[in-house]
Image (cartoon, rainbow, N blue to C red; front, side):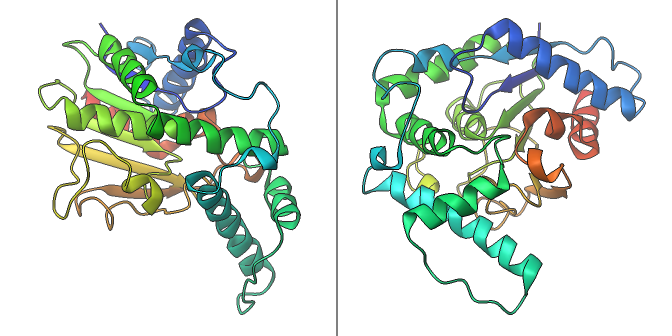
Length: 275
């Protein structure tokens, strides 16, 4: 009986459904409480948890290296992350500075200085790229993850919240299940604006065909310094009805889901959907 269902991003494969329920539930209720929502303490949340599905032995183990990136999508996504961070850093120093391509070690140094995942080690950066790629490329894993979302949604679900990779999962789930009672999609720190991701969505997104299922509202929230949400405005990519909102998470936690969930924009979107 969940009014809000959440879909997590990367790095949950060594955590649990119970941990997600506690962390996300507390952040959601805290954000609603800050906005003085009268049902903040009792709102029902359920996690669409799939992290354990990545522990099937098909990955390269807990530690990744740059050499583990393939020459296609993974390298493209890595450099897109780098370019977003480099552009932001260059603008902070000198708005007229033109970014020039660098070697891969220099690119890693740029990404690590942002710590946009909390602690941006090489392994963590590569893991993000690989987990996104595997979801988009592994048909069986994609189906099993989608089944987890379907199992969490029930007749009372009004809002689907997706963070990072979870925003891709949530978006596809709604497009493939237009009969669900979900009326609002909230995407947080989303890479859905990246062309390499758009081109790999199922079903494909065509001109005038980007709205997610039967929802009546889609709120997309991106922190200014979140490199994962490198394209901040999804309305230009999917549909003019997308409500794009910028927020200001702490610089060293720009991609952190708890800061997104407690943010006033997220809380306001959830409150509007619940009322």
